[in-house]
Image (cartoon, rainbow over all chains, first blue to last red; front, side, top):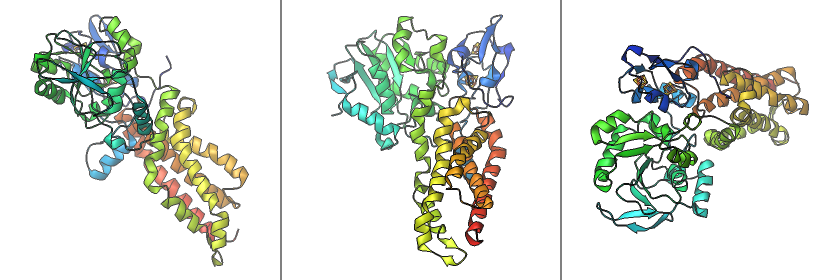
Length: 99
Length: 344
Ligand code: SF4
Ligand code: SF4
C-alpha cells in the first residue's frame, strides 16, 4: 500500500510485551497498522508509521503500551511555544481532517 | 426547528427527536461552507439521543461528536436502519481533533450515557464509536464505569454498512487512515485561509515599499511595479499551502519544510523568466529567499492537517526549520529593501 513515512527513529512508542495478553485491541485502534501479533503477543511491526495519536496506549487494558502522544502539527507547537504550554492545536472548530 | 429533525418518537426515557438520513440542500451548502471555513463556529448539533427509523430496546447505538458534519456523515450512512445516535458534546469539533484534545473522551462519553439514561433506553450493551475517537476514549474504562462495551467502527462513515454486515468487524482497510490526493485537496482551502489576517496588509506594505527608489519616493513606481512583489508573495504562499499538499508524495524529501522550499523555488523559476522577481541579481536572490522561506513555513504548517506526522517528528523538524525559515525571509526582505535604494 502507498504509505507516507515521516521522519524515522523519532517516535516515542514503547511496548512492554511482558504485560501483554494478546487481546488485539491495539491492532483494532491503530490507524496505521503499527502492531501485529506474534506468538499470541503484540509486536511493533512498523514503528516509523506511528503518528503518536495515543489510541493504542489509551485502549490497552493491561497498560502495556507507552507513547508520548500529542498533535503532530507545526502550528500547534508554535502555539505551545508562544503560550509556554504543551503543543495545542487550534485546528478547532471544524477543521476537516476527518469526519 | 432544525431541518434534519422529522418529528419525535416515544421512548421509556421520554420523547426523542427522529432525524432524516437524507441530506437536504441546506446540509450540502453547510458542508461546503465549512470546507471553505465560513461560519465554522456555529456548525453544531445539540448533544443528546436521536432516533433513526423506528429503533427499539435492542437497536444499535452509534456515538458521534456534535460537529454537524460528523453527525451528517453518520446519519447519511444509516439510511434504512433502525438505530440510535448518541451525540456527545465535542464543542463542535470533528471527531479526530476532539479525541486528540480529549473533548471526545472517556469522561464525556460516560457523562452522556448517564444524563441521557441510555441504560434505560436500550437493553443491549454495545456502543459503536468511530475508530478515530480512540485516542480520547478508553474502551475498557467506559465498560468499567457504565457496563457498555465500546466497539470501534470503521474510520469512514461510508463503511458502516459493510462493518455491520460483517458482524461489527472493520476490515484492515477500513481501519486504516490513508491520505489520498482527494483528501489532501479538500484540506487546501482551510490552509489557504490560515494567513487571512495578513492577506491584505502584507501585500499593501510591499506595494507601498515598491515606491521607494534612489531618488526618494514615487507613487507612480508603486502603482506601476507594485503588483510584482504581490504576485511573488502570493505565489510563494500558494506554493506552500496548496501546491505542496497536492503534490506531497511526489516532492522529494521527507521534511515538509524542505518540500516547501522545493515548491517555492519551483514556482519562482517561471516568475524569474517572466521578470516579476526584478532585474538585479540581488533582487532575484532576495525573492528566492523570501518565497522559499514563506513556502517552507506554509508547507510545514500542513503537518497539522496530515494523518501521519508525529509530534516528536514535527518537533524535530521545526527545531532547525523554523530558524532557517525566519533567516531566509528576513534576509530576503532586507536584501529586497536594499535594492530599492541602490540603482539597478
Ligand atoms: S492492547 Fe495491550 S494487551 Fe492487548 S494486544 Fe495490545 S499490547 Fe497486548
Ligand atoms: S500511537 Fe497511534 S499510530 Fe502510534 S501505534 Fe499507537 S495507535 Fe498506532
